[in-house]
Image (tube, rainbow, N blue to C red):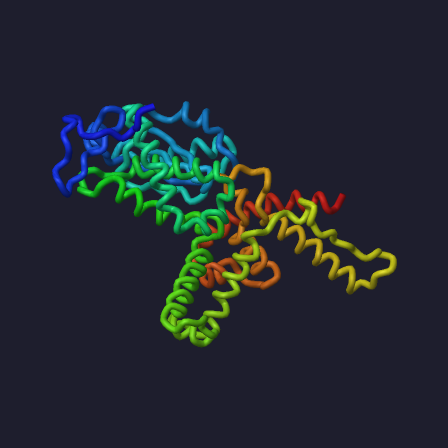
Length: 366
């Protein structure tokens, strides 16, 4: 098999200090992107409270309208002609309502610049992906500790990188004068960080990232780890704020590697006292243990879910929402302000917990 990357069509050596253009499927890279230029479309983003019958949805879409589904985020994106965003949003809302689906966070965005990778010449796209996949994996080596938390299986990582390359192809604007390889490298760094944001909530992931960077910078400067007060001063925070944020990070780290308490040989058996022997206070504590066990298990990763699905990641934001509103006696508005996220986003994650929690409590009551 010949290499996907060839020299320039003229087969003449490149001048000193310059690089021969990449050629994929017999087409120079720049020419391939120019053949299918990026164009503006109106886009509608939304989620639903249960799985959407995607094949039926696609069949009913108006002419010239396309849909994509990000299973990891549970997000649907519908693209249509410019000026039709709000009309599409109303149509989607009505279509879902007619099938007992409730849309969550539906919004229209005008003038989104994208290209459809499938419109590129197949041989060009295939060779481009084959060329950039190993380069992307090499670029991601510095982020491998973060990636393994979310994609421990090498096959899943390979699939994710392929999806990221296609995503970059769809977003790359060749008119900006930036090489595709440089654009892809920049996007990969962002998308790796988004793995944590999507799995654990934007605020928790960003808080952890800021703390890790501050600790690393302090260590590089002083050759030791900072104390609590030193870290707070270094980050420009009060000690109370740092402690609150540290608790968020601790919860994130605890849930990140959590598995279902019912699964695996190392699972811990929960022993409950006999109701005829235990006083009421002990039974109250046992009830709390059952609820705590059910909530934790409802937020733990589902080992049967595909790695690309949200269920394969611990639902940290859902756990925090339920815990703080149930036992912390806070309102969702208060929690939203403390965590720096929207009530809508909290509801999406809390609804996932509710569905799993009902199943857990039903099992425990049998």
